[in-house]
Image (cartoon, rainbow, N blue to C red):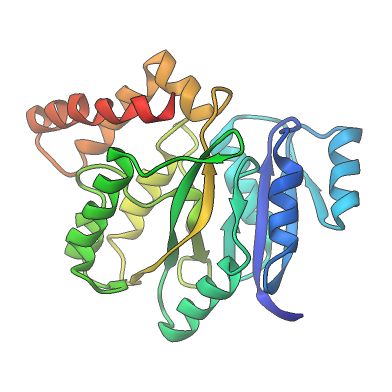
Length: 264
């Protein structure tokens, strides 16, 4: 099997997800082999056994301070240029690594690449819903049929009406953004904030149109918890205010909240 030493999957693991085995199996089944690391601030014998069973590295850090610090610790554990933060509940189709690494080879200097995705509920593929269709349209507003968003305007266009770039489908080129870190004071919009900051720089965003990620929707996810507590709506408003006047941001926040139903 072909291996690319520049690319690594890092799985930020909190506790012991019942879907971790499926995630790791999908990463091991990639047509382009990559290094795989499980990064955790909640170590256990059971998690260590899972990592050993799949033949992947286990990186332990601490103390547990929340999702933002966990993601930054995962980036630090990567130690390589191309990093995919693979969410422990999600599944990656076999061509994912080859597609994103190939995109970076074609467009050197890009800061991130992301694929399209579909949603899983339980073990079933969910039909396309309004939210997924709207996000695809939003991406096309910036891309205009291309696979590269190079200008600040094009990159911001994919983000100003909501976050259309799915975090677990993103691969970052840390060589192009060596000082990049996620905000640690957010719980749900760290990715939207991150892409918005990266959009201000020179590196293009690359889009792989194939849906190579299966993103799991379930009641125990952090996103679902933030929606229930109202934190998601507050952070959404903060993000919209990065692109719009406060009055417009409040209206967009209320409209955007309508998409939360697809996460329940």
